[in-house]
Structure formats: structure tokens, C-alpha cells
Length: 524
Ligand code: B12
Ligand code: SF4
Image 1 (cartoon, rainbow, N blue to C red):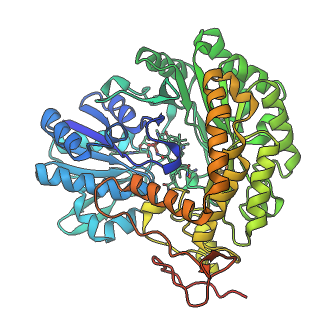
Image 2: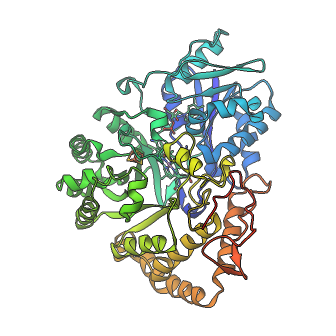
Image 3: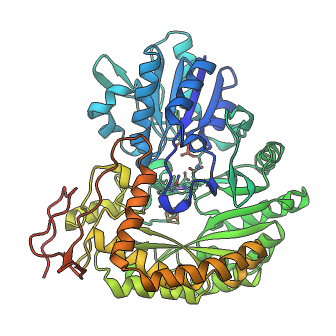
């Protein structure tokens, strides 16, 4: 059969779509693991300016019998829009939704009016489920019993039992030549993605990973990993993003992977990986080996520099139950010349302005770049349940805003609008107007000097002269527009809680939030 897998065009606003264009992995993997069918992969992230035309071109050129849509929660709206367009072009095409949103919220999708847009919902890892579905469709057989598949019969949805976790030794590496568009990149490099493991056994209660893989951890063979890197190189990659959630869960094995990369001469690429402090801190030989293998960036899952916050996220195990592991990991990585992007989660129930300020200040003092996001109540996570029960969730159902940039929660002290505001304010204060960390010089000296001596003074001047509240509102409107990919109005911005026109700690009496679903928590 002929199939096309679309991955979605959505982007967290502050990732900058022109600078950071990451390919989806599902399409090339599904293609490789169903070689009896002709499967193409279409990454809409490369077509943000001409979405409708791009979808029409693909459907006309590749004439798929089945279209798969790969979406995380914040991309679900785009998946529905894409499905609508495909249906309008050719109602005979069978449509299926896969990925995180489908896996976690398949019941919500099936029971919603948009459920009628889809014929299938693929839950969990897709390789085996998709191949079996295409096989049966080709033979015009019944779909009952295919593990992980939900399908529509008339108006009713039938949910087959979930599948076992796949035996990774039986999977073929991604077939990247099945990508229809290929202009992926990051800071001038050809970017690609690969996996060495799947899953994570840690218990962080804000994370969706256990919904996909349970609390399991599986490793791909070294041969698979090398084949995947070689294939990416052939496709022009110079920068590899390792998609594992927590590659240092088994540090000894990770070191084996690093040695294989070095031995096979693949340390001519740059690599970016995400990992927790614990594994890096406990194995001092790891950071230098990573540097030798070409690892230039580590996205370090610090989440917060506040002990109070870490305890609320059940993320203390990740930090090694002790902030000293974080300090040690930072020290080891920086000594090895690896640039650190520290993950920071804001907006926990008792967060107040000083917590936000303290976090940004501490990250800056440690010379970390920061990847900050506001806690998002992703479907069926423990954190969502706790936040809902506490009355902290202000948007429980419009998933378009579930990307960490917008606040979908309030805290005991801050409204959603204030959370967004103070995050914007302290990022500016601690980062934008202070220029890049020295160690970013090693990426590109020219870029570093331009940012440091041209952009930063300009940003500083603007920050000092402008009215912060107006500047923030302009910034939010600009980013809402960036997210408005389909030409229909993106959900309205939060109503500011402002007393006498000024930002205040806490809601003005009688103020309402436009997308309130859960009643506002009563405040002192
Ligand atoms: C690498 C990664 C990134 C990369 C690139 C992601 C990309 N290419 O789009 C970066 C750093 C950019 C990133 C950023 C973000 N990410 Co991210 N990311 C990941 C990570 C670690 C790996 C993704 C991956 O490649 N996995 C491997 C592939 C093979 O798995 P997969 O895509 O899920 O596909 C499999 C199945 O889902 C299924 N499947 C998927 N689609 C389809 C379609 C069909 C038709 C079928 C049959 C099957 C199928 O089959 C596939 C093969 O088994 C995942 C966690 C994880 N381990 O998956 C988080 C994850 C996907 N990210 C997440 C989030 C929230 C984000 C951010 C919003 C965070 C933020 N605020 O900054 C941003 C948004 C990115 C953006 N587009 O703007 C969440 C999503 C939660 C949710 N419920 O929606 C996850 C699950 C992390 C988490 N711990 O909760 N991310
Ligand atoms: S360590 Fe990372 S992947 Fe593992 S549960 Fe925590 S946040 Fe999720």
C-alpha cells in the first residue's frame, strides 16, 4: 500500500522555526519497518508558510491510500486541520493519528467530535501496529486483534488491547531517504535525529514518557546505532540530536556507544543529548569521553535550582536526591568543554516572583544556557492530577497551548498571565540584556561577538527605555501570531491581572481569565 506520514508544523515560539528545524522520527521508522509497503515521510515543519499547498502537493504527487499523522499534544489541532484538508481532497484516503497525543488521550480523541476525522488511532510504538494495519487493509481483512490499534466501525470506536513493548533488536534503522522534504538544520548545520535507547525508569510526575513506554528502559544494539548514524551522514547530517530521554540511565552502556562512535570515526559530527545530572556526576570519565565523541551540547534535566520545587516534581531522584550532583555534573561537563542547556520548569503551586528570579539568577551564575518552560498538565500525568485537584489548572482542554511557553496553570501567588510575564522579565534581566556565556564563543566567534557587542547593548537600551508591560504584551502577541499556522485565530491571550494598570502579585478583584475551565483557586 502507499502511505504518507505527516509530522506537524508546530513550534514552541521561542525555538525559532528558521534556526531549529528538527525532523520527526516516526515517518522514516515506520517506512523502514514495513518495507512491503511504500511509505513516505512529510515534515510540515519545513512548510510552515504554505501548509495547505504543501499537503495538497503531497496528496496529488504520492497518491497515498493511507495517511498517518504524528502529533504531540500541542500539535493535535494541526493534526485535525491536516486530516480535514486530506479528507477534502480525497475522501477515500484512510486517516490515522499516532504519537504521544494519540497514545495518552486516545479515549478523549475517540469520544470527541474530531474523532470522526480519523479512521484509526495508533497507540504506543507504531512500527509493528502500522505494518500489520497496512497488511490487513491490503488483504481487506478485519482489523480486530492488532495490538495497539483503535479503529472505527461505523460510528463506534473499537480499542484493541495494547501491544507489548517492541523487541528493539528486531527493528530496522530509520529510512531517511523516504523524507519528501529535507532542509533540516540547526545553527547552520545539517540536523538529524537518532535513538540509542527508549524509555526511562525515573518517576518525574510531570513527564509523559511513562505513558508511552511504561517505566521501562531498552537499548538498541551498537550495530543499529552505527547504521543509523551512517545513514544520517549519507543524508547530509553534520549535527545529530540524540532523542533518548535519559541516555545516562545506564552510563556504562552509554560509554560503550561513545567508544563505538569514536572507533568508527563518527566523532566528526556534532552531537546534542539530554540526560540527568545523576549519571554524569557519578562517572567523572563520562564527560571527557562525550567531548571526544563530538558531544557539544548537553540538555541537562535540572528542572529547577530550588529544592522546594524539585520535591514537588518527584524529580529529586533525577537530581540524585541531592543538588550536589547537579553542581558536580555542571562542573564535569564544563571542564570537558561541553555547553550546557539547563532545563528549568516554572509555575509549581507555590511559586512566587522571588522563586522565578532566583532560578534564572542561579542558572546564569552557573553559566548555563536555559531552556525554561512553564509546567504543563500533560494528559494522564501524576502532575496533571495533582494540579487539577488543587485547582491550579486554568486551561485543561485547549491543547494548542500545551507547549511550555504559555501558562495553563496558576500558582498560589501568580495568575497565568503573571507567570508568563515574570518568566519573560527575568529571562531578559538575567540573559538577553547580559549577552551570551563566554563558552558559546567556541560555537562561532563571529556570532558570539555580534550578539555580545551589537545585539546585547541594543537589547539593554530597549529594556531600559520601554514600558515592560507593553513590551511583554507585544512579545506575546507576536508569538501567538507565530503559532497561528492555520489562519484561524489562535486562542486569545490571558486577561492581564493588573491593578491600576500595573502588574501585581495576584489577581485584581473580579478579574476573569478567558479560558478558565477550572474555577480559580481562592487566594488569601
Ligand atoms: C527529541 C525530543 C524533542 C526534540 C525534537 C522533537 C521533534 N522532532 O519534534 C526537541 C528538543 C526539539 C523537543 C522539544 C519539545 N518537546 Co520533545 N521530545 C523529544 C523526545 C525526547 C524524543 C522524540 C523522539 O524522537 N522519539 C523517538 C520516536 C521514534 O518516537 P515518537 O516520535 O514518539 O514515535 C513513535 C510513536 O509515538 C509512534 N508514532 C508517532 N507518530 C506516529 C504516527 C503514526 C501514523 C503511527 C502509526 C505511529 C506513530 O511510533 C513511533 C515509533 O515507535 C520525546 C520523548 C520520547 N522519548 O519520545 C520528547 C517529547 C515528545 N517532547 C515533549 C515536549 C513537551 C516538547 C516541548 C513542547 C518541550 C518544550 N516546551 O520545550 C518541545 C516542543 C518541540 C517543538 N516541536 O517545538 C513531550 C510531549 C508530551 C506530550 N504529551 O505531548 C515528550 C514526550 C517529552 C516528555 N518527557 O514528556 N523534543
Ligand atoms: S528523567 Fe526525564 S524522561 Fe525520565 S521521567 Fe524524568 S523527565 Fe521523564
